[in-house]
Amino acid sequence: MPIFEYQCKKCGHVTSFLEKAGTKGSHECDNCGSTETEKIFSSFSAGRASSSSTDSLSCPTGTCDLS
Image 1: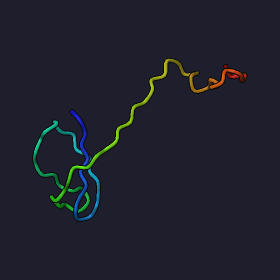
Image 2: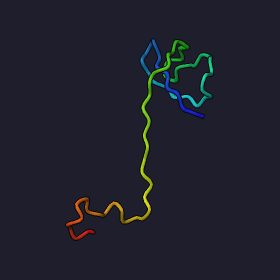
Image 3: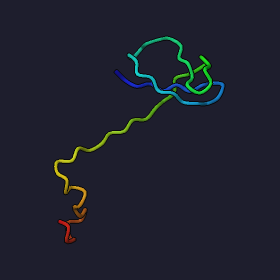
Image 4: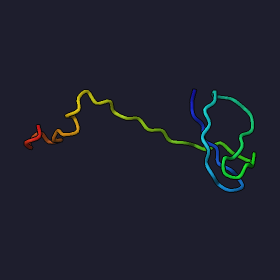
């Protein structure tokens, strides 16, 4: 299930909710309790899985002693 973010129209606080896409309903602000929220565009982050613990020690140019 995706995580959607909603911003409170009263206090501006952003709250995240785990919900099915297309779900309609009101959400309550964690900060002030208002139900006047609107869905906002949220970014996502994708990490890179490391195959070994020495990946962070490699030299990007391949010319240093850490390679």
